[in-house]
Image (cartoon, rainbow, N blue to C red; front, side):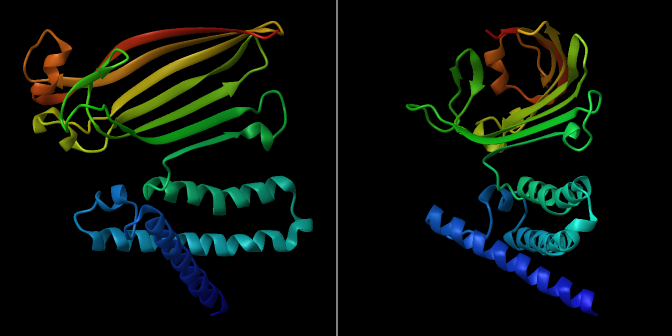
Length: 265
């Protein structure tokens, strides 16, 4: 019964803090919204969105409430145990909730297992970046197609970019090897006038990467990129024609190889 009472209290605290944050964000924005507009729009009605958001607040409240128990017996636990429990109960749930509820305009999370397990062969590295950004070109109307810095088929609208890097650090000349995953695209189909174009298509890129340490001052990085792109039901010769065509699926292409040489003085 004592455990149940704690869970109820932690749940109410979680819902209360979440509701206060929503009110603060609404005051800053100038108009009341029970959640982030992009999150609310992903549901068929606001009631469903609020039920899901409230459940997430309850779970966060319970997890972070019980996280306080970690520090009651600090002397009986080593640093690694405390760090791992703190990460699993506080940091990871907050990151997952923030991502799902569209809290983050931009954020980066990175972690190296070498922080928990010191050694030359224990460095498995993770870095995740999430960005929400708006692209607008003055003098254009909604749905107008424009080009910027050799990138075509752009329109005014809200986009998101995500990057995940998984790498392993090695104490050799080949000092790091891994994969870079990227995803980018607009949130809504309606940003394009042609509803058959699939305006919210997300371009996915997968890039194997390697880093070579050549002495104390030189590092050579090599990256090969493979990417998805739209395919269409109608044959065409120019890329600018694609925004008027009908989306028929996606295909994979090899689209880049990148070399970077860094020298420190």
